Structures are given as structure tokens and as C-alpha cells.
Length: 299
Length: 232
Ligand SMILES: Nc1ncnc2c1ncn2[C@@H]1O[C@H](COP(=O)(O)OP(=O)(O)OP(=O)(O)O)[C@@H](O)[C@H]1O
Ligand SMILES: [Mg+2]
Image 1: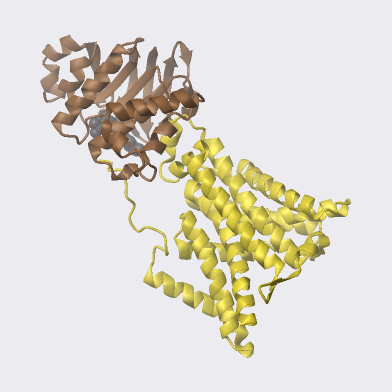
Image 2 (image 1 turned 135 degrees about the vertical axis):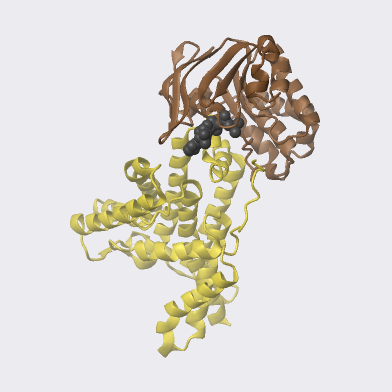
């Protein structure tokens, strides 16, 4: 029972992390039609910022957390301004190639300017403790990660439903030109999408740092691939789909980890994709993606 | 209020509008007529800036040709595009709220939402419903209300009667006509020339991207252009 509860919390934590990163991809994709494969480097940038700040004397964990959130938001907005804005009206494949290019350039920059090897960042290690909840022992980090993800998603939902800019973002996901006809600046909507995407990545970055206690140039890339898969499972472009897909992916992975005997643990990745493919055969448009849009009765 | 000088719109090799000169005075109601593919929507697109064009677009004596769409709307222009383009996934209330995105007077915005819900009771009844579930005519009412939520000085309307029953068309035009009394300047594109000319002061007729006729609505109504170009 203890083991089961621990693994359940483990799955929640992994699912939360995938959901946060997948949401970041989906927010940008829904508006721009761009799969931002450089999203992982936004996470890495935030972690390297914390690494550098620690090197010059930062020791407060809460300051490190704020810094990670701010740095990720800023890095994401900066990428849009420098790399994606010039190709905004180019074909989708151009955007995709740009994103991959940016990702590679940033990874190389981290290698050249800092180090190709992992660097220790112990500032958030204190978050990682053991909690006793109702007779069970669980990892504090995992519980906090789930709560932080739930809080972030709640805040995002509130923003998208209450604020004018949030409503405009939902509208822009369907009909960008008409949003501009309302006098809403396209650049503002897109910058906001990247800022939100970046801050969500920052939340993920905090927990990655706390868990690993180190940074490395390629730390974000693999995660973004997983998040991409989560988006596909959930239905690409759907925000709720990204969150659900991320959570589901976490449960599939941890479920397999529990179910597979130790000596076959290496099959986890392969079986994960078998399950993903099975889901997509059953629902090609993803769990929450809609095959058919409601449309606005254009003639 | 609005002047177009030598407006040219091209899509690749296709020239949809060729050197169009047009003007709309303050408070005037002008109809832009012409057969399918004449370049009417392209002209509206060039005025809002959503469609790239050559030539000059002048609003209140200022050249706005280089301004992006958003900046033109802030200057008092608004458009109700062809095909309505309501935000299908947003509620009626959210659609209206976005129409007022350039305004900061919250109380005024709420009052205007009430006003259009009274004017078109169906909008009030469906205020929390997704706009995509409204009927075509109801969506048109929403699209026009949404365009007016910005309290514009000039309204561009592209085919408000598209796909609507004659009775609804008449109702919508009655409403558009009533806007003239409020001092709103209107440029309306229509296939339904008879309806448009009920309220228009002047009319322009386009044919394959070129100006075929311009004059008062009364002159046009009596001329054989009506049958030549407009099938009415
Ligand atoms: N995006 C586009 N790409 C290429 N050609 C276009 C595009 N939009 C319009 N055209 C062409 O430009 C010409 C004018 O089109 P426009 O939509 O302005 O006509 P219209 O007068 O509004 O017609 P309708 O009454 O049918 O709406 C047409 O020949 C059309 O095929
Ligand atoms: Mg048209």
C-alpha cells in the first residue's frame, strides 16, 4: 500500500511536469501554429540563470524560484521577438525549422559559455524532503509539484476566461485577423502567449532543478519531446488536451515502471509509445481534440 | 472622412482592385456595389489593412496606409467582415466584450452590451452561449453589435445580408439605416443593391476591379447600370 501511494504521487508529479511543459507548447501552438521545439531551452535558460545567480552569491531558495520564473518568461518572450517574429508569416515548416535551429544554437551556447558537463545547483535541494501524510511517506517535492501545476493551470484558466487579453487569446486561436479587427495588437497577444508559455516552463524548471540539483545544456530537449507526445495524445492545440495528455503520460510511464519486472525496465520507453500509438489509433485526433470545428457558419 | 486614392490590390498576378478612387464624407452612408469577384471585399480589406495594397488610404486627412490594422481601429474605424467571423468558441458576451477592447470605460461598455441586448433580444437570451451556436442571422446581429461596441466613427460593412432571409435582411438594414441618424459614417458592400440603396446617399459600382459608376443613390436606382451590373 505504501509503495502504491508513493508511486501514485510519483505519477502525479511526472504528469504535472509533462502537463506544464505541454501546456506551454499548446498555448503558443494554438495561436501561432508553431511547435516551439526551443521550449526546452527556455527551461534550460531559466536553470542556467539560477546557476549563474548562485555563482555570484544567491542563496535564498525563494529568490531562486522567482528568478527562474522571471528568467523563463523573459527568455520565451525574447525568443519570440528575436527568432519567431521575423518568420511569423512564413510557412509552418519555416517556423518549425527556426525552432529547431534556435534549440541547437542555445544548447551550443550553453556548452561553449558554461560547460558541456552538468553543473551543480544545490540552492533548491532543501525543497526535497520526506513528508509523512496520514501514515504514508511521500516526497515533498512531488506533492509540491502537483500543487504548483494545479495552481498554475487554475491561474491560466482564470486569466483566459476573465481578462480581455485572455479572451482575445482564445479568440486568436481560431481567428487571428478578426481579433486584430477588434483593435487588439497582434504583437501583444503573441508576446503574452510566449510569456505564459515561458512562466509555465519556469514552474517546471524550479522542480527539475530541485530534483536534479544540476543543470546541463540538453536538459530541456528530451522533456519537450515528451511534452510534444502529451500534446498529441490530448489533441494538438487544445489546452485542456495538453494538460490531460501530460498527466496521462505521467501515469503511463510510472504505471509501466511499476508493472514491468526489474530486468525488463528498459522496455518502458518502447511500451509507452505502444500505448500512445494505441490511443491514437482509437482516437486519431487525440483525446480532447475535435475532429470537426463548430465553425461560425461562414458562407 | 475616408479617401482612397489609386487603391490597387493584387493577389500574385491577379489584380483584384485597380486604381480605385473613392471618398466617403463624414456622416455619409455610401454603398459599394458590384458583381461577384468585383473587388469589393478586397477594397474593405485594404481599408482595414488586413489585405496589403498599393495607393493611399486617408482617414480624417491623415494617411493611414502604413498603419497596421489595430492602429486603424483605434482611430475610429471598425469593420464587420464578410462572413461575419463571430468568435464561435466564445460566448456572445465575450464577443461583445472583445468588440470594446479599445475602450477603458467599464461602465460604458456594460451599458452598451445592455443596449445591443435590448435591440436584439436574442443576443440577451443567449448571452452566455457560444456564438457558434447562433443562427446565421443571429450571428450577423452579433457581428454588427460587436463592431459597434468600439463606439466607432466609421463602420465598414461587408455583405450584411449574406445568406439571410429577406425579412431579416430588411430588419438589419433598418438598423444600419438608423445608425446614420446617430452620425455614424457607413460604407456598406452589398449584393442586395435594392436594400443598400434604401438608405444610401451615394453609391459606387465596381466591375472587375475598376470603378464603373459613382453617383447618388437616386441616380443609380434609375439607371440601366442596375440591370447591367447588379441584376436588379
Ligand atoms: N486571398 C486571395 N487570393 C487570391 N485571389 C483572391 C483572394 N481574395 C480574392 N481574390 C480574387 O480577387 C478578386 C476580387 O475578390 P473580392 O473578394 O474582393 O470580390 P468581391 O467583390 O468581394 O466578391 P463577392 O461579391 O463574391 O464577395 C476575385 O477574382 C478573387 O478571386
Ligand atoms: Mg466579397
